[in-house]
Image (cartoon, rainbow, N blue to C red; front, side, top):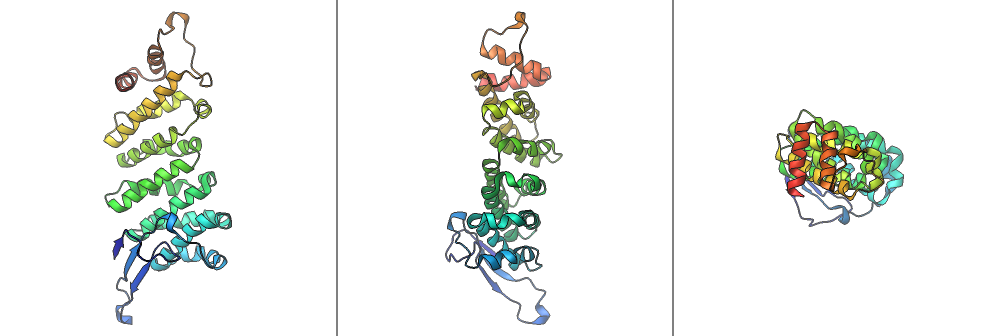
Length: 292
């Protein structure tokens, strides 16, 4: 099976297949050879028979024939882009079966399913929150694996997720994964936390609590993987800027009169020591005082 990055024959589907069946019944168990082309969302064309494709979609997504599933995943992408409202009533079943394909060890199927996830995120936003958890875990796992072209696709899709799903509920979904036992999952989740947090408005930060975000960022500062540490540092710098703007909408604890800071940086130092253990606060200040 050969994966090709350029689109030489754009048809109705996102994935063009050329299969060579086994020559006889005796050899029918042998794998089917196929060329798979991955088409970008903007190059996809609308379906010609929407009703028929939609009616059979769940059945085809659950087929034992991977070529049938591959075509169905392309139809998911087309429906999400051109007919999102028509697929919404079966969205839960679609996401469940797309998640199943993301888990599939066949790389072409897995990558196409991940591409379908990106189109689903762009179309359904907050409507995915109640059904997101199993898919989120699989995307974090795929972004953590060694197979580069699947890993990179999963990373792109996670970025799309943080752009299109509202940041406040997205951060709540991500919090368990920044504490995950797998350091690679922690690292990918930390990147997602940073991407989502930087989309928060002042009112959102006030609702979540700047202190809560500070603790999430600080917890990854000494993580095993550089990717997690880098995301933590970037988030700390972002929170430092937000704090130093001293917006009235952000609730900041009052200090005793004898401890009133003489500068914004002093104020930040005292805030860190009040919010974090001393050693963690020192680590945060080393990042925000030196790099800011």
